[in-house]
Length: 77
Image 1 (cartoon, rainbow, N blue to C red):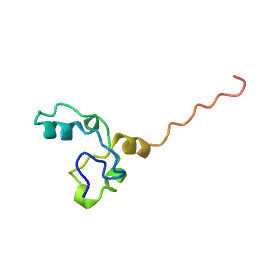
Image 2: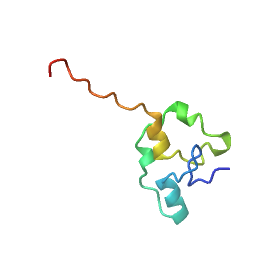
Image 3: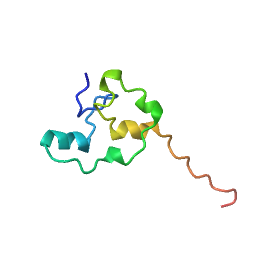
Image 4: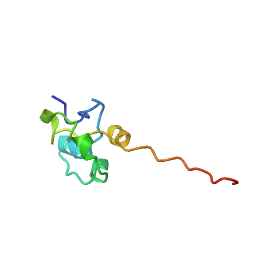
């Protein structure tokens, strides 16, 4: 089973503020994961035993989004 402080997809630390607060006994006031939209397709990849227990890391979330298209210069500029 994936520990709650590890990403269930890659196994790296997930830097979840909610988990850090839970471990320290402090109230959770904010976490990076509360301000981003995690694609449904990415959440679907989380193993059933880790769903709702371990956050996906920032790197896995970032990789799930397509890279921005590079700017194409207009002809003659």
